[in-house]
Length: 328
Ligand SMILES: Cc1cc2nc3c(=O)[nH]c(=O)nc-3n(C[C@H](O)[C@H](O)[C@H](O)COP(=O)(O)O)c2cc1C
Image (cartoon, rainbow, N blue to C red; front, side, top):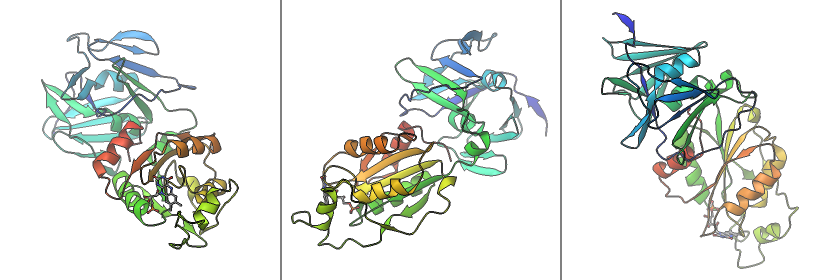
């Protein structure tokens, strides 16, 4: 089997179709690369460079996918790209990480681990198109897409997130459910996100009478008392290992039940990403998201998802993508 360096620039396939801009605050970044659709120049820490001196290759959008040259990017970050013609595989290396991808296959390998890509690498006009998000994040970089400016930004991760953490990013779906709707949604979300699942179980279970909000029920009394903190049974001993917490609850009187406050009082959410989701009879999730932002000032709190027991994986994936959910 003969290995040779790719004779032409690789193209990266950005799987950012439904990905909205998440402004990236580049604290302590050594490297920020920006590429613009239909522009043959890229900017590396603000300095213009030609992407492909021979062919003037330009990032482009085909079939709602954003494509940009990979060799220039991988080399700018100090990595290498090698093509095995016989096996139709691409090997990218950076730091101590190696990524192997095969044309037309959705299985990618990061070091010894197998991962499933959203789309298989393809060859288009003699170029190999690869999924940039998987590659960049595996190598410890962030990828942002600004649809208004048609701009892709690839940057070092913030200083407090090491490459080691990004390679082993851990996600936990935590939920409380009174009557089962949020439980079902949480299970679908955990399966979709490839995350661990944990149920917040009240020390004193809620009976149907406790939830009968037409009366002066226990739930109503708690919601009328800002300081109510219903006790939780059990504890997540390895909570500090999780980077991203997806937290789900039913909406009670326009916001999250007080037991969710108990949860936030119990665990340190500093420097974590919180992704709230809910089920409700019609009310939105926004009030509860604002509340979580207030009580967890040192966490990144994304937009919330209001779903139901029948919310599909496709809608969940869209929400995850729109909120820059890390590749698992
Ligand atoms: C005490 C209580 C208050 C509620 N308040 C609201 C509300 O303000 N707005 C709303 O849309 N639904 C409200 N609901 C309905 C629940 O949010 C909805 O049925 C939810 O899907 C229940 O989720 P669960 O099965 O996981 O407990 C309330 C339900 C209860 C028990």
